[in-house]
Amino acid sequence: MTKKLHDKLTLVIGGAASGKSAFAERLVTDMARPRIYVATAQAYDDEMSAKIADHQVARGPDWHTVEAPQDLALALSEVPPDSCVLIDCLTMWLSNRLLAGADLAADQAELIAALTACRAPVVAVTNETGLGIVPDNALARQFRNAQGALNQAVAAKADHVVLITAGLPLVLK
Amino acid sequence: MTKKLHDKLTLVIGGAASGKSAFAERLVTDMARPRIYVATAQAYDDEMSAKIADHQVARGPDWHTVEAPQDLALALSEVPPDSCVLIDCLTMWLSNRLLAGADLAADQAELIAALTACRAPVVAVTNETGLGIVPDNALARQFRNAQGALNQAVAAKADHVVLITAGLPLVLK
Amino acid sequence: MTKKLHDKLTLVIGGAASGKSAFAERLVTDMARPRIYVATAQAYDDEMSAKIADHQVARGPDWHTVEAPQDLALALSEVPPDSCVLIDCLTMWLSNRLLAGADLAADQAELIAALTACRAPVVAVTNETGLGIVPDNALARQFRNAQGALNQAVAAKADHVVLITAGLPLVLK
Image (cartoon, rainbow over all chains, first blue to last red; front, side):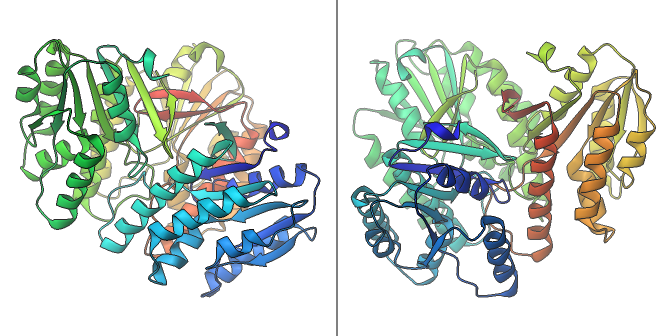
């Protein structure tokens, strides 16, 4: 099924450790174009450093990595049109923007504009975070509301949306 | 696809900020009947007041609103048969009933009876809350067990059940 | 649809109180073979004891119960080939192994080998736990990562994978 998903914008959504990044990497690899990996994670602790390193090993060497923990729209504006882009992931980027005190609605609008303007095909990975109990703290509630709004906005824009559960895809769009 | 979902009872299930209310409102609007909005939220703090106000603006003026934070069965018994009803949402109602110390199993049975008796078509919105880590506190665990049981009971009764992810519907029934 | 799922290994995945155990029990019951219930729960408190007792009543008497809170691979090696097996559930087992300080990657490999070697059909129940907000504590994050990895590994091995939401099945594989 990955062969059919080579359109302009694909959103891969799933839970933590659901296999969504591996699925998204296969989508990009199948496109047989120069691969740009847009990394949004910031290695602010050992747990995150280890996770980033694990993902890099799993991905292999045939990727050009661009670090974009904050200015994702700028990174998208600079990718070559003949490449294909993996954004991994929107959740990390949103988390970084929230902690930086950014205007999340303005960020979302800017990202949608950048995705629209980008001439290379893009596969964006994101987390669904709204299917647990209401979090105790207000910041976590703000985050999951912003994450839900962002997921809806990107999904509305996307040509394809795929939900990953236990490594298995379900095409939502 | 919304055209096919005009039956007696439709359950719209999804996560926080998944677009489930907007989808449910479109279902009701498409029915072209007088619209009853059964609001179960209680504005007990500023965050909730703001959320209720946002939803009202998004919904527009063509709705008759009935407040039913506790006695949802009574509210359903009073809707005109030629109307159509949006319950938004079962999760808020269940939360209110839990905090009021109600017998949740009796409540669930009463709600199912009221949904069965209601002669107007009903679209009910609910949250899936069981897909995160087990909550630390016993009340949250009790809530998600009651929410799961309620969702199963209403889904078993429903003509249609639609799961919403990032604004996109997946018909489960 | 349960009639089609009588293959070697079926994974039933869902949230808390989603109806996944009841669905899995129906799958096994439909196979019309001697039924082995592999129970992984440990009744370490009253809440868990009550839940175990409720499930036993719902299941009825026609089951041979094997307790396997820790050595699930051993339990699988001992089931008669003409029986059918319900493992309820992998999440409890993983939780027990984590609390026992086990090597979870080695455990996972051993379980996959035991599922492969088992000559009776197996229905395994598991939780999806990665769709909420990132948990505050490191142990919970470690658990949901291990749960995600285990779900992916068993799903990759399984003939069928079914996602349960509000009691309703969605076949992922």
